[in-house]
Length: 126
Image 1 (tube, rainbow, N blue to C red):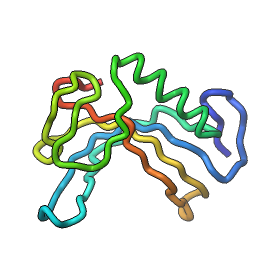
Image 2 (cartoon, rainbow, N blue to C red):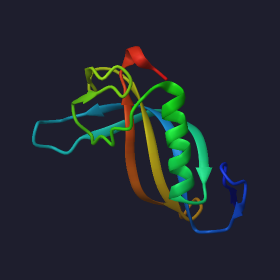
Image 3 (cartoon, rainbow, N blue to C red):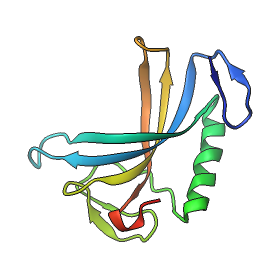
Image 4 (tube, one colour):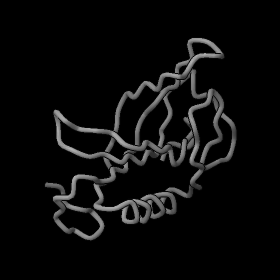
């Protein structure tokens, strides 16, 4: 049973939302292939009982680090959420604020939606 970091309510609901600051690098085998997202590390910011509570946490985090939500995809060139300059996601590790909907418990954990809220270049590490 998880406890929502926002409302502190114990939740036995099957679905929950995780906000994570991941260290990622995007790998492209070819221009026509699907990208691979290599995750080196993930630092959990919080677990939330609803998407609404997770979004409050996301907005508070972005305000704290002075960044904008971008809801990016996985592309070789992305724009930093802080300095708004383009950077290459394929040549070095970078931070990504990620919102994940999941349900169940290990070993039967199921990942629903994964949304990349904001990407940060190497110079603007939050």
